[in-house]
Structure formats: C-alpha cells, structure tokens
Image (cartoon, rainbow, N blue to C red; front, side, top):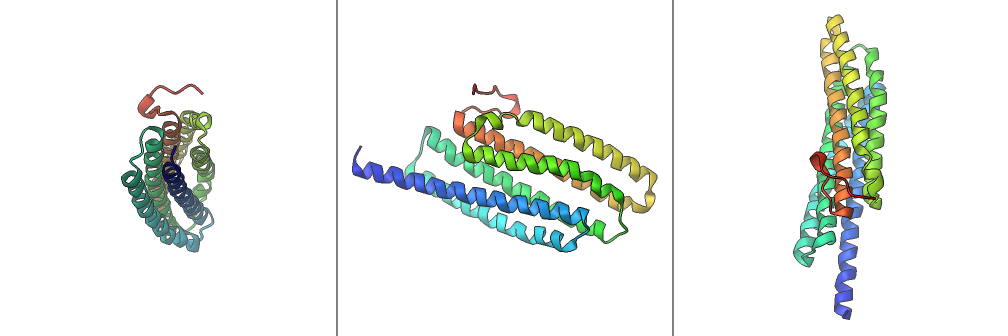
Length: 229
C-alpha cells in the first residue's frame, strides 16, 4: 500500500472517529435532557423542565453537524461495505437521539403544566418506567460505541419489559382519571408523558439495531434473523 493510501485511510478513520464522538456527545446531552425533564416532573422543579426544553436546541445543532460530517465522509471517501455501514449507522443513531431529546422536551412541557397545579401522587409512579428507559438508552449507546452485538441483541426483551410497565402504569392513571375529575388535565398530561417514555424506549431499540447492523451487516428490524455471536 502506498504512503498516499495510508494517509487517506488514516484521515478516513480520524473523520469517522470525529463523527462517532459527536454522536456520543449528542447522546450525553439527550440523556441529560431526559433526566432533567423527569426529575422536573417528579420534584415539581420548573427550572429543570425549562433547562430540558432549552438544551434540546443543542441536540438539534449537533444533529445538523453530524449530518454534514457524514455526507462529507461519503462524498470524500466513497466508503463501501463495513465502512459505509459505520457512517450510515452513526447518522441513523443521530436521528434517533434527536427524536429522543424532542420527547424529553415534550415531557418537560407537560411537567411544567402539572407543576402549576396541586400535587398528585401518581407522578412518582413513573419512576420505575423512567429508570428502565434511561437504562436502555444508556446501554444501547454503550453497545453502539463498543460494537457490542451481544448486548444489542438483548433489546427485544427489554422493549417487552418497558411496554409491559407502560401499559400497567397507563391503566392505573386512566383509572384515577375516571375517579378524580378534579385533576383531569393533570392525568391526561401524565398519560402523554408515559407514552413519551415508551417511545424513548423504542428509540433505544433502534439504536441497538443500528449497532448490530454496523458490526454484522445483519438487519434485525421488524423481526429479522439475528446474527450469530
């Protein structure tokens, strides 16, 4: 291999690492926004809610940057096979993180409305769902960062657990909504928040699927066959 080829390969790896680093930075911001939104709900802290809403703009800017960097890499190096998968998968993770942060902002907006009214005890019931969802997001990003296909393949089961708790909490809140008409708007907002958390769990699954595809070239979306690990 010529020195020129070595230089191009090193530059490609450096640009790809920059792309990946920016996505992981995006992930850190999105996770913080989610924590602030849910803690703002549970602790009735409007300042935390406002922070989650404002900081969503940082995630939006990073998504634009990642898209620009990814397209530059494709145009400059014309990657193929695994190299192309790494670029495309990283850009797809960015899209899911942007949507995740949007949902965190939506949670914060609903939480501000709830905090403006008399406290209802059902808000604390969302804590177990939040813990599961936050853990799924953290682990999916870790699997993507490390190329850990084995961990990424466990997300079907985790998604089922999140869906089960989501349905259980939704039923309980709906029952309270029917019994306590003095807090109708608050219970409706809580139902939306529970749904937002469930959707964030779906984004974590998407990120895990991208990790599998990037490393193995196997598309496991929509019940696709899992690769051997």
